[in-house]
Amino acid sequence: MPPPSNASSDAGSSRLVEALQQRLQASTGRPVHRVETHISWVLLDGEFAWKIKKPVRLGFLDFSDLATRRRFCDEELRLNRRLAPGLYLDVVAIGGSVEAPQLAGSGPALEYAVKMRQFPRGALFSERLDAGTLEPGHLDRLAVRLAAFHDAAPAAGVDTPYGSAARIEADTARALDGLAALVGAAALIGLRERLQAASGSLRALFERRKAAGRVREGHGDLHLANAVVLDDDVTAFDCIEFDPGLRWIDVYNDVAFLAMDLLAHGRRDLAFRFLDAWLAAGGDHEGLPVLRYYLAYRALVRALVAHIRRAQGGGAPGPDYLALAQRLAHERDARLLVTHGLSGSGKSHLSQRLLERVGAIRLRSDVERKRLFGLAALDDSSAAPGQGIYGAQASQRTYQRLHALASVALDAGYPVIVDAAFLRAGERDDFRRLARERGVPFTILHCRADAALLRERVAARRAGRADASDADQAVLERQLAAHDALREDERALAIDVDTGRAHDIEAIAAAWLRAAPAFTP
Figure 1 (cartoon, rainbow, N blue to C red):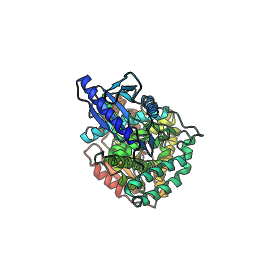
Figure 2 (cartoon, helix red, strand yellow; figure 1 turned 90 degrees about the vertical axis):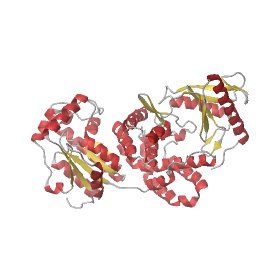
Figure 3 (cartoon, one colour; figure 1 turned 60 degrees about the vertical axis):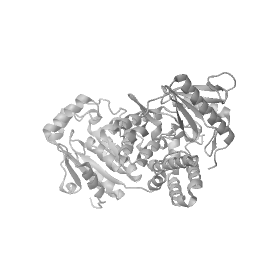
Figure 4 (cartoon, rainbow, N blue to C red; figure 1 turned 90 degrees about the horizontal axis):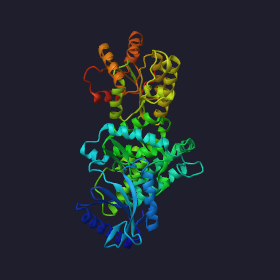
């Protein structure tokens, strides 16, 4: 990776930023804090943030020309207003002189600044994670927002290079080459080989996803320091503006950055909670085979940025992103778990905790059933028991869809949880055969509770209307009267949990992870 160019211009801009900081302090009467990254300075005056691009040329961007910096300030404003319109206000010329700069001053522009509304300290996901105040609900809300953002974003044309297999491989090679220049090529030989092998096997899928419109104008830089909690709002900001090829990407490439950053900080629970919420909202399970590749690629990118910052004399110690990339490049642990239990038995609650503990992909019948019929997860589709989208034919279609999606996730190498009632032995047998065909362990999570507690939970859930399940008292009574209990051979594969009592999620997770493949029906 070449060092920054135009050192004299960089020094002049640095003096200008220092002078502007002093001028803002004098005019506002408040301390003005300066934040520096490898490509920009940001001045925080207590009300506004003023972002000024450095006149640097790196392997992945060239800000050495003033007109170029102005153009990318305009792009930054346009692009970030998609997700954070209340934060991004204007592009302001800096006039005057280097020693006495003026915002919106007269005379030729010396520099340009993106004017943003300043948000409080501690609002960033990265800050909240360090403080222990990043809540699971924050990840859920951002995931839903990103799913809608991706759905509305324009798709890359088939005649563009964006999101093609060749572009993906070139981006990965560029990150590897840049990192090799800093840490030595020998340290990356194995990782380079694994990623080349993975991209070779994924090339056809990369191209199919582009043809299907899954390469979109996304964010491009969704790490923890670019996501923020603003009162009741949760969103992302500071997207990639300087290279459209890093922004027009597969939607999985976009969300993989945040998931990877959570993994790097030791929060697998939040990473897979975020992925679970994004998949539930958007339904892009067919793309799961590309996820691990993008997780490893994003870890590489973050490792490269960290080394560049250190080379520039900045940056604090952080996660070992390179070690994470090494691990992600070959990590696989395919196994299949299906839930079993009546409505209100706690299947979804327990599967949520389990997917976070293990790092699993979850498929919820309540969500996927509604998706099959064009409904959102919280839409009320209730009908008389056994009718409407809960009729026999609709249920058969739902389980077939769950089977197909579970196959994709297992082939991608993930632990998979299928959260459904599985009250018919034939439904359970179908998934047991799937596990046997894939040579992976099969487990049944049997959830049970007293009938009185089941009725209480179902009534409370119906009253709250905050869950995808439409089961009511009539559905529960029908289930209580007729369902296929687990056979003896199934009990040998089951983890039995009385959800009416305290239970140990660590023990449940350990039991699932101890399961070995079974090759007999």
